[in-house]
Image 1: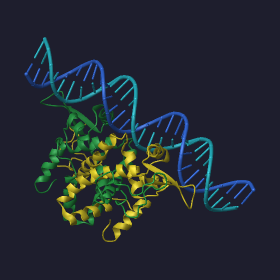
Image 2: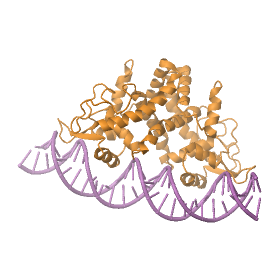
Image 3: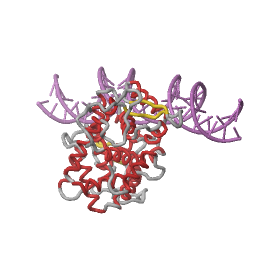
Image 4: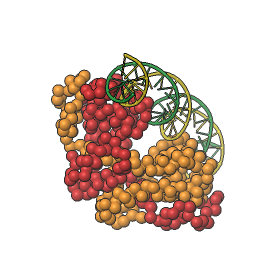
Length: 184
Length: 184
DNA sequence: AAATTTATGTCAGCCATATTGACATATCTT
DNA sequence: AAGATATGTCAATATGGCTGACATAAATTT
């Protein structure tokens, strides 16, 4: 594996690397740079919100719930579980806090009275918009350099990074909006 | 806040939204689409590795450590703490496992014998390359549509998303490589 | 040489968020 | 009436963060 990165001495102290045959079929064709950039970019991107959330006693989990409820009003609990890919027990705790503290309300479904449709309250809208504002500032700074065409390229890239098999309700909406010309 | 997204009925059932004055200064200028795309793209991106890591009894934390030790051989423990932004206690547990199971070795620093310089073993290289292979496949699929120029745009975007104040040793290297023309 | 600082490691406990399994309730479907 | 579905909840567990305290070895300063 010593050919993935140039001047990389590997571990010669204990285990005697001595240029053994690679255990994986990949050589130097790995996208280390983009892998790393994604790590740092996402870390700082969510860091914006994390910092603000602390003041509310909330975590990333609360943000995710509030975000998707805000974006897709009337989302069912089951939909939310699909999107977040967590168990209902995990969601339960976080959702209960958001309900108790008045960031989200439930409305019984009209067609199916078992369903609890979720909506953000004005209080919830305010918080999620504040968090989105921080993240939008970072995004705007980043796309300022690459222009509108570059922004569309980034959208295209990000969309193509997402699994398209078994898309949940939210992803279907996103993909549908993307296949045409421009999204929201 | 009912003007952030068009046909969004907000919560009128319990808390009487009634179009109150917005609590935040933002209107409809928030980058909801990119915020969401980043969430899904990153979720699936790390999901590739997560799945594979399970077979080894490792988690995301192990991957991050192994990745940066591989990429920046001879990294000090202190550097790693800077990059990962976790405490040494948190790192300790994960690092100990990687050392015990032979994915990483330590070498005493030459100049400063207090330092423990970290190196991936061939075993470690194999695992990290396998994981990078999965993620590279996804990246390659995504950039196939946007071409080399688009790929450079994506790199530029991601780099601009990263905080440049107080960069750690790894980020300095990344930024230095990026300010020229092309990176590795 | 002695004192202090630095780099690292480790023990103990706490918290947030995830998990699985089991079970309860209300409601819809058959 | 029976069964399936949507949701909620209790209990136990795991992971990966955290703080605080303390230990050791090696470098640096006094």
